Picture 1 (cartoon, rainbow, N blue to C red):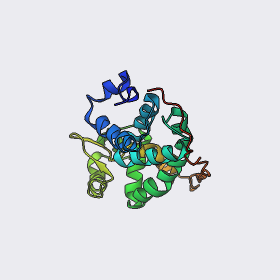
Picture 2: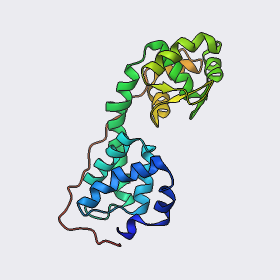
Picture 3: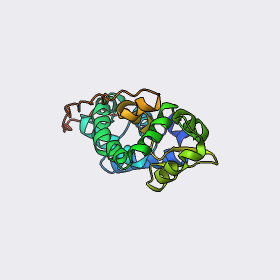
Picture 4: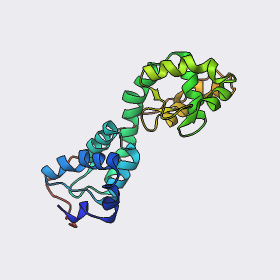
Length: 208
């Protein structure tokens, strides 16, 4: 295996099962095609994806399309970031959000308004202006729909990484959860045009 895959960064990651799986999804297929990743490029993809398999694949695919050759560099990942973010917003996060009722969206907006999870159910109820018991029906429904889960007693969290920033940025309910009754809709995100560079037959010199 190339030294690109054996740096100190990767050595640390092999002790973490989710990160190990993420790296396998990324570079094992790439290796079969003779393509390598620089360590900082892998680190950025793992950070952006939160080790969520579908996100790893999304960033891997677009980064591959952006990269002119091997090894795939951090700059290639950075070029792919806005394209992947726009696709995830439109095709993944929005679809999940639409599963929820208005009351359930307010519950998720209250969660997101608290920052990053996990979240105490009592704190969520406080943001909604009620008691935890009064919002339990919405919590239970969201769990059944697979939008949130309970990692511990009295706590909930979103089931996918980076959902809370999406809710904060895109949800009108996010304003309601903070006590605002404005009916203004969230600003529409503009999907960036793809600047994909087709892979060249001329490979970037390997530093392996």
